[in-house]
Length: 73
View 1 (cartoon, one colour):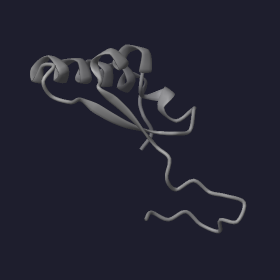
View 2 (tube, rainbow, N blue to C red):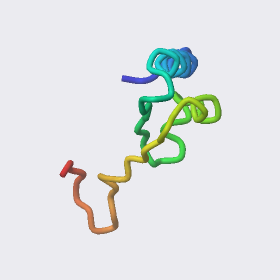
View 3 (spheres, one colour):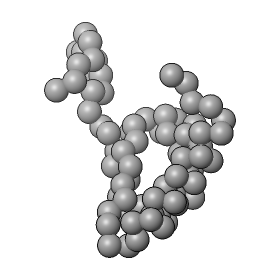
């Protein structure tokens, strides 16, 4: 499913609301694809970074020159 233009702003609003609801005592994290272009369409990193404790980069399932397919571990 492709993201919609409003998804980026809505995701930012969701994370800010979540941070306000749980306070500073709880962790708020996200996981994004490590491809530099992938998260740009749905995450405004500069806007969400202040409300997150961690941004996890999903670096698995990366193909190599020898790969014949992508599979989850």
